[in-house]
Length: 292
Image (cartoon, rainbow, N blue to C red):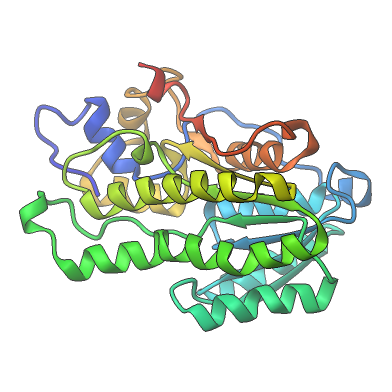
């Protein structure tokens, strides 16, 4: 995901490739959502479905939503981590159910959504978050069709399949909210990560199409564009290419790596009634990167 460690390593473009996806903050310590907020929060009684919530932004959002009273139903491929996240939420007084599902497999996505509806009877918020990074940082002619296909199956296919099976339920119940995880890579191009970069442009495009098609049905569809977020993905990239968080942070106007909890707050705002007039956007959550 990250290009070279040569003279341009601290340029915005190269550091961003190190991040791949995520948002900007982190050196500061922010308070975690109160576990006991539980049944008296903004999402009290609402059903929140999340893909890719075994770690990173997805897990942080699952915890935050549950702390705000939501009934969280989430999936991921890593069963042990999924159970751990669900156990943590329940231990804090929240409600969460983990179900194994691979967003690359249509039948598993269909069954995941159906299982949520079978359990709770509705979906108020669908957060399509599952995604992977480009396996190799190489120029376009050196990219493999295998890598391109795999990234697209997860990042674009997963969002497409999620909405394909979530939206019929939202139509039946008279409305709802969809939030998709895009990236700053959906707004600009970055050398050497063509599969990831192109896939996030695809997520942003699908979001706009769905927003237009279902706006009159009381369904809002938005994405958000993180930069470098303190997640396992960013840690893997930084270690693999010998980058420090300080080096990454210096490429962002806010001069820090953001925490996953900050991205959870962005998702929650987009999902809330406070954003009732917002649909079809890819919200800039880059810590100022996209404004420079």
